[in-house]
Amino acid sequence: ITTVEGLASAEGELHPVQQAFVDHDAFQCGYCTPGQIMSAIGCINEGHAGSEDDIREYMSGNLCRCAAYPNIVAAIVQARDETRRA
Ligand code: FES
Figure 1 (spheres, rainbow, N blue to C red):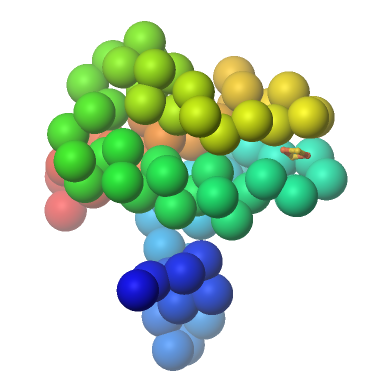
Figure 2 (tube, rainbow, N blue to C red):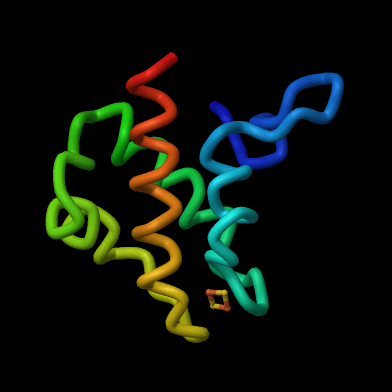
């Protein structure tokens, strides 16, 4: 089982999805962020990040009281594109 605590490298380099969440300010209070990040990784790895609508549908079970949804989608798009290039 991988949790959000296990995503960064031993040297402290963030996972691409973690970095994308930072880059896009995809959180406010951070309460939902571990779940959002783990679901975002699943969204990308399982091929459900083809479009922003696909991302919103896949991520619809993750609620964010701070309503950071547009930034979360933007972060997933960035991470998806970086992952595809790698
Ligand atoms: S960042 Fe506060 S609940 Fe999502």
